[in-house]
Image 1 (tube, rainbow, N blue to C red):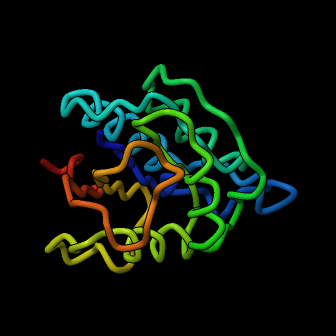
Image 2: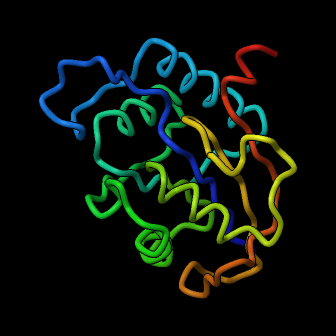
Length: 165
């Protein structure tokens, strides 16, 4: 059996926002567009998750909403600015074989690097810009058997490149 991970960093946020906290910071115009484009790309490629496990921040919620994946989502406080180790713990508790984790850097970028058995030959992979999405497959029967460095690379995309294509 195979488990598939879709690992997405939230789309571009509005740093000039008057939001009362970092947690409440929304997406900016480009971020809203990027999330929509990313959702279209995921649907076209057949990368629609069975479940989404997301940070509860405003920008991750907006990214999820604008992708329009129609996948059930749970918002987990532990994913707000989570380390790679916390993301690993959350994913190992996932119940569906195709799971999206939606979160923040630097943890999500570190997690991507640590989970892939080989890294994409993409100049932006190691800084994991906003909206970046990595798809990995794992030859495991369930997420409880997850191990570092065992994900087979399926795809990697940065939505800004999709917008200019």
